[in-house]
Amino acid sequence: MKSLGKIKKIKKIRLHHEGTSTLTVSGLLLLVLNALCFWIFVHLLHLDFIFYTVLGVSLVVYAIMVNFFRCPIRYFQGETDGVVVAPADGKVVVVEDVEENEYFRAPRKMVSIFMSLTNVHANWFPVDGVVKKVEHENGNFHKAWLPKASMENERSTIVIETEQYGEILVRQIAGAIARRIVTYAREGDSCFIDEHLGFIKFGSRVDVFLPLDAEVLVKIGQPTVGNSTVIARLNGKEQP
Image 1: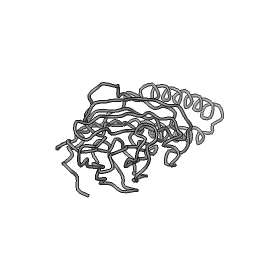
Image 2 (image 1 turned 90 degrees about the vertical axis):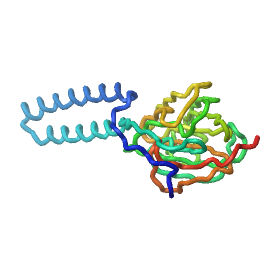
Image 3 (image 1 turned 90 degrees about the horizontal axis):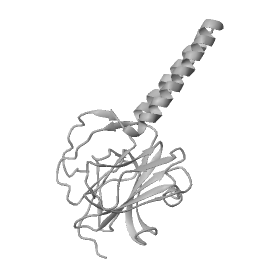
Image 4 (image 1 turned 30 degrees about the vertical axis):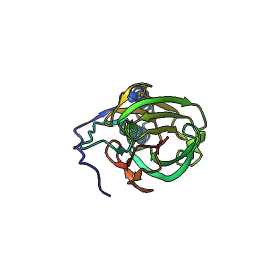
């Protein structure tokens, strides 16, 4: 599949500010735990292998957490008119026509991207436009790749009004592990590709609902890179 434009090289990777408190508290707890293990198992019991095992596990766990809160700086280069970019890193798990019953109450094309624990969990705006609606709903915590997760899990819905192509709906969905959805979008604000829409902590999913005449450029199982992979092209002004 051909991209609609070249992607600039990722210039640097930083840690997302959503992870500051989590990484700080976790780091201090692991430091205290390993200090206690060193005192007990090395100084008192002379069971050095237990301390080194705990240390190794602690380092692996903390490395996974640091990896999770990566926040690469990415810039999409090329024409953004009519382009829909992936709002998240992950894997495409759904590409189908569905009945969107919460906002549009009409058929739409849906592209769903599942984010595993190892993916970057920052979310980007998939299109340029104006944020028309932001709504958070509490719900269950089914596994994010299940079809019912889109309707039953805790979620945030963001509706974006594009200049020529009607409304695009993005839905951040919590998963079995994810317990916190952060949404930066605010009603009435202009939004652009390259800007962060929000962040979901731990495994989760993002759905994008498109007009029926949109040309989807990805397929099920395809990996996506947030703010880089072009997932669809909007073909014309949506009819009411």
